[in-house]
Picture 1 (cartoon, rainbow, N blue to C red):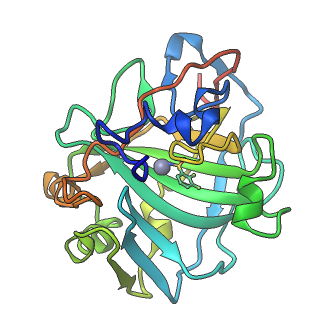
Picture 2: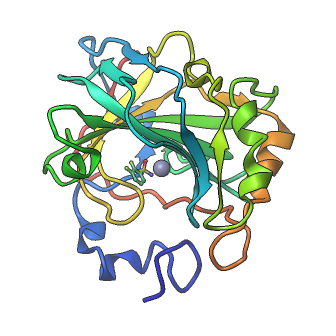
Length: 258
Ligand SMILES: NS(=O)(=O)c1cccc(F)c1F
Ligand SMILES: [Zn+2]
């Protein structure tokens, strides 16, 4: 099989051949159906403490554009449904070719134009890779933020301004050390959905505590167009790099809000 992607010949319907867990019972993303979620008053806000990275890259890996530090620097996530501290690993995006599609998670069937994932790994593991393979839903904690078109996102502008430099698959650029990742996050990380799931790309490991925020972030139309100019490994627009929703099976989706 050609390397996995999102085209007709290598897209989500093919992934099960290399990753049989694709048909597992804890797959992501899902459709977050408000009539079926359950409020949990024990779900407190998340706390993200992000320290500016001195040497991080912004890269086009052929299926997303990704902010990737060369090493950890003490940036971490705690609180909410998490029992321990999680180390920041990377953030990346999923988006569509028009404003009616692009997000991975959906809310009552509605897709947003894009979705931003902050990936963290359980610090009781020696590395990110070990956390992915650690078995069970506590290996990774991924924060999901929906993006909708509106005002320019000043915190994301240093990143979206770099997109033209990573237009082609396999290219990367150094991110200025004064990039303030913390500024991307809302001041308080309170209202979210949380459930046990998987990576949404191969290897699709069922190792993720998903935390998807109810309130979308805004980006400008120009910032959305920047994403839509990115090219994938086949020289086609990367837009559409989202997996459709997977069956919930007997999982519960909890909310920190009523
Ligand atoms: N789309 S995703 O957030 O599930 C994801 C994708 C690749 C590697 C990861 F660690 C990861 F979390
Ligand atoms: Zn993702």
